[in-house]
Length: 377
Image 1: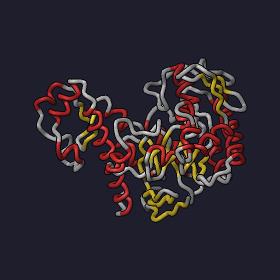
Image 2 (image 1 turned 30 degrees about the vertical axis):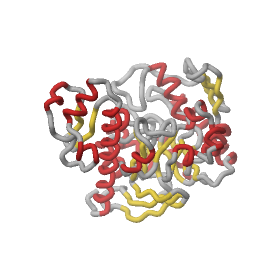
Image 3 (image 1 turned 60 degrees about the vertical axis):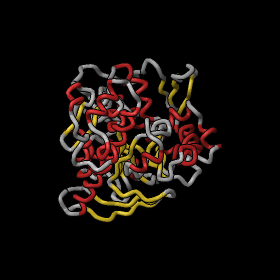
């Protein structure tokens, strides 16, 4: 993999770049749709290409459970398995340490929806998994068997899956973890990063993952320690405080320290309204489930805001989802028709909304690249 910086903004840390992989080139900044189980739900790989997607990210933990990396490898790797010709990433499974652990225990995501007085203290363990110095013992949600994932296991699984870019195994901490817990977790993540570098035998690009939670000293320490290691790029993971404003500040702490010449990927964040400030903080690629997740709940993202197609008023609306959009859905189908399909519990509207939302996200980030090119950001 090779990353080339083409332009740096004079107004912010925004930059344009080219991320060259064995499966093609990605123009950055770029939105990376989430193909958790080697698929964008409701769409074929051919249809995803038509939305303008440049790169996808699949989930190591879920693919390990089903169908298993041996099956994927027997097909010649994930590109052949899912018939995707462009670049691919796989995460490490580190997010599942949070989502199936403390995230599940407390019903929380990476950003708190409301402030909490609850705290996760040093040496505290989640209810449904066990975090050790060597890795994490999970229970399979498919058959209940114990699944152990550590830095060595994660890298070997990702090598068998065969994505262009893989991530070091880490612990994604909870937004209510205290400083002591986060510090101990960070030291463990750094040790795991070293093991990942020593374990990797493939020519895949390997990204280290910056952690440190909401704490500036820990975020900067993580960026400094990992930045000195021989990674091809860096993910920025973990929790991001109480609101989007604090998250923006946290990104600057990290991009201040990370090597400028290497790409930065923001893990799991990327709504339309987030894109400008993420780019201004120096983020090159980012993934988010928003366009697909909301589509399956009847929500379209448009130039006028979010549109709830499940509302009965939409049955009489003959306009396209977005008059400013040129995707095939907006050219051929009305809000009324899509609303009817949703109310009839058909599957087709989920496909139509997913296609439109991905197209809209990809067009939005393409416009963001133009704004950087023209000196607007």
